[in-house]
Image (tube, rainbow, N blue to C red; front, side, top):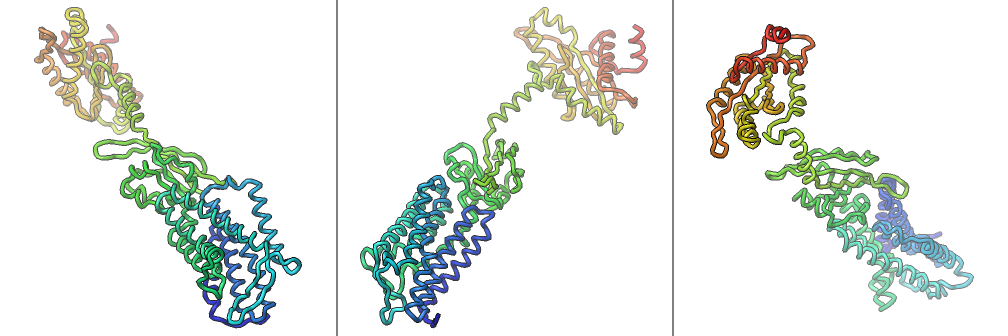
Length: 527
């Protein structure tokens, strides 16, 4: 086989080199990206088509040129079919490929190749092939099957263009740029061929315009792949996203880069969301609490997060789920941010109610023990001061009997509010039951506890509670018990000591303070 150099082959060599590089690049991504393998085959088919044409132009004899004319159909026949298949897979319309469609496409491929390589026996494709002086490529008369092939080529490319146009209308701006490049890359060569066959427009009469314009396709494909990472950042599960759902939806590829974000999520994230596509999750949510995402997550994972916006706290349930292809391989993740703010506030209110005494608004007995146990354990472990103070409203039953329960409730509310005013933030103050209150005073000595109790006792003694036209006098009895360096002492025992001291105050005439002493406990037991 004799070849000679001609400058006519340069654009085709350049085009072939780009297409081969794109094929290798896409092939390396096939394990991470489902459509990469298909694009690799498409690029290889176009490279074969272009490379064989370059060999045809470089060949000297008509026989050699005819050989390469036939060989280029190993790329020119599957190329348009692969382009159609790629557009179907890329836009997530694999369900269109029913068995009849697959049979039709496969039959078209094998029948075309069979007709081309047996043309000498029937001349269905070319009636004759010849050379014209000054033209580096062969000229030919067309048999009927040439138009069958051309119709299949046009239909494949036009169908792809329609698919991409519809895809363009439904995806965000980032994917639109990819779609435009892909549409132009596939349609420009075919568009030139259609103009040549239909209206006779032939901008480069010495070349096959379709193959020449594959150089344009190669450049556009390269821009799409390297400029916009059209294979790496693909619309994973795009059709599953409801654009108007009142939850934030973030779709990540296998490498953890954002490939889709819905309007609700953009609104939550703010300005960062407008240019988030292609960025890592940590970059997009840099101002958010850490979400426990990892590309290795194989099962659904949920996490509650809180977000501070101005003076309000928003709460979200972050649901992270893997996205799997038909081979059950993880190809990315979807993160759904469900706004649970109302539910969270309702839960917090229920928790508050469960911890709060409904009448007085202070801590109830159950929650007091939950908080006090921890403080008591710390005091025992590190030998720190701690005092239990109990107080009981004097003659409370007579208030109820004389003025009614509304008056009694008002007295309890007044006592709770006034006592709360004198407490430190570290003190645990609660209604213990009935007209009885309890307070745990961490880091409080006997002297400090007595001074606090005296301030409260004097304040109550001097105050008057207004009820209708009446002024009610209120006093209270107090009992204090300090933690002792005793092994085995429990919180309940310390409270019992404070209770004993309280009842000693009542026995001694009420409106007074008693500090528990060991001798007092022995006397109480004898009595």
